[in-house]
Length: 228
Image 1: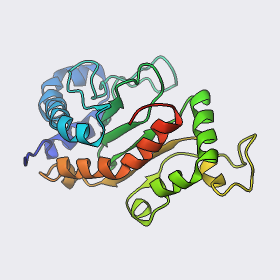
Image 2: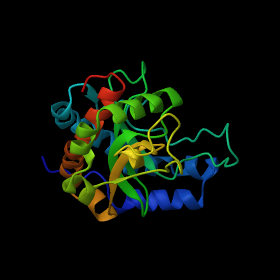
Image 3: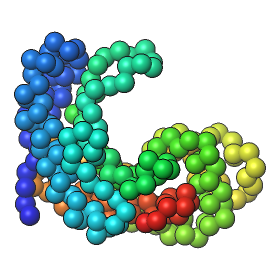
Image 4: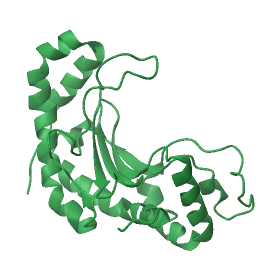
């Protein structure tokens, strides 16, 4: 199936939103958001259901307009100093079926002018989850190395986020995976061009990305006692 979902109008809208991040402008341009961002994104999510199920039967591409894979455009302005009401990016999380029970790794993609990317993992795990992952990593280094310490992984993906400057408390500083044990986030991926996002190659490229990053997701599922 060859389908083009997004167009230059998608990124034109997101750039304009970044310049006019207020409710008056968004209300006046909501039809453009629906036509060029939300509706094609929901169609892409629907078209990813079958290939994602082949990667893992426990992951969901949920095209519901509310509560599905697509993130809301509205920002949560209750915390932090930035009170702008809208996100200037459009993201989708393809989550584990048990994500409401336990913090779980996800597959992910995001569209943002100049910063489109796709990948997966757990971003900013809660302390208990992070402790589980680090403990599992320390005890199961061989499987981790097979998952992410390969040339194929390094050539395609990079890990995102900060590391601790020192080894985490309770872990051997001489452990062979000490640099991985220092991670605060266990998420990786790669960027892609707006031209790809606007082409028929987007869907097959995302499927390929999710297949290739699946060993990382599988490992993290095992670390937090989830099925993959």
